[in-house]
Length: 173
Image (cartoon, rainbow, N blue to C red; front, side, top):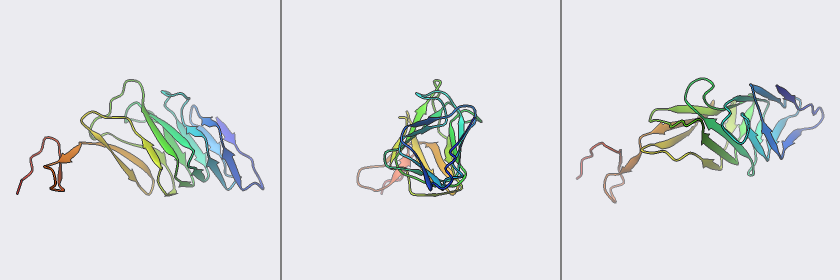
């Protein structure tokens, strides 16, 4: 469904609670200049496990106390939550990523759970699931936040300032 924040004459709509969406929800803040999120924004139904997409039609600011919650249950279409922002995302607060449905990410899996037309800043805190024999690579791109599962790196030997993926060999001077 669509939640229209009809705030003609009001410059900012503010969320201090929970906005959780289902079935392709649209949060329309286009009549306000922006949404300032101080609470929780979740594309799917909370507490977690419901995968969905939410569009924020307009600009959004994620304040220091805000939380964006996304669930991952695979890499395919509709297998992970997506928050789509049609305006500019001013990032802050926490991104909380949770695994759903028994899914275990593998090296090479990639997700773009937050997309935007423009952005500034970064999430202050990233709460990402712990991975076995892998690690998260986080990239802020021109179009969204990209989370990629990559092979872990370890120091080749203490003090050399080099690293290599586990299972590869390195030359030692």
